[in-house]
Length: 434
Image 1: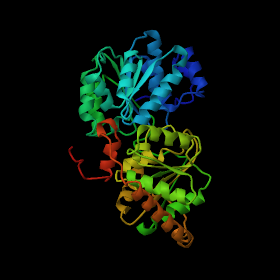
Image 2: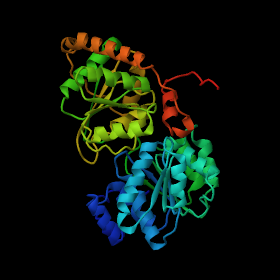
Image 3: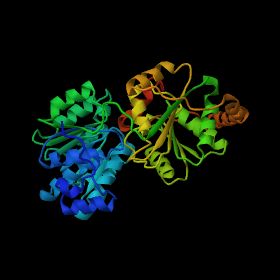
Image 4: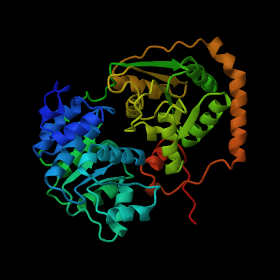
């Protein structure tokens, strides 16, 4: 285990070359974060790395900087491949590589579902240095794109490894590992250490250095966490009350299903709040559009499923609201990790109804503390009841008029999104065969 307490070191002191130190400075990275300070020196020595770090800890830099430094010394096409469980995270990692490598002419390609496969094949024909991909789409290209292989790969990164190891990705991951050379460096990053991550570590890392930049399941000290026990029938009223109390803040509201994101966003907009949904049911273009609208401050409330709980670079979220309590308590850690990032403070409020109490108690057990009550006098909350009921009725009518639920695209192109919907009770029906 690497020693703690090495954060706040300048990148130069970690052995990073001048070109990349300048690139870090241009991105506003003055000193290394904890995970970067501990991982980069070992990575520069050529060691395999297993890094456990909270979301928002700067782990993309922890693997991108050593890879780019090695690429400067020995430039070649298809030098490194980073696997990510979601499309948005893959695109974001690719952008970070491009920003860090701008001064040295690094070419990156993001291979994700929902975007044109032929265009991606053309990008592969230009022989980029860095690939960032979701497993399903990478496998599609390995099978179908002429002349493309990973035989010369020098670095493989598995980001959010605990998420990459669900049953949706396991088969694809095995095939990808079989198509990469044994003589490679492997970095495995995960927010949580599960049995599957341990198994993967044994299978594909050689004498790795293990770096833990966070306790097993922890939330940062600058995060103020509260809950409110509520009757299920008034959940929407409580949500509107909290958002009104927090008006002016940027908020992420987590729901269990894609349908709920759409309905809640419509309802809130009918009440004059600037809300926008993001979910796995939306096309890739619409998802990135919604994300950019939220980042730009055009909408200050993002209604989302767990697809947005990890990895997305949304720097200034003030409040996370758990409208639905996650059935998997580890998802709570990832959701609330969207706020109080990089030393800033933040607030997380969980609305717990009588049917979700058991899940909520599991969360308290996991984080090892009882959370204080969020003050919300019921008589004040119920002042919203008539307006909320009417706004919801209008929203349901509008959804019915526009054809209700849209057809889902193939899950293999969807990264983890389709899996998350099924996991969280989106639908138990199997799609009809054509």
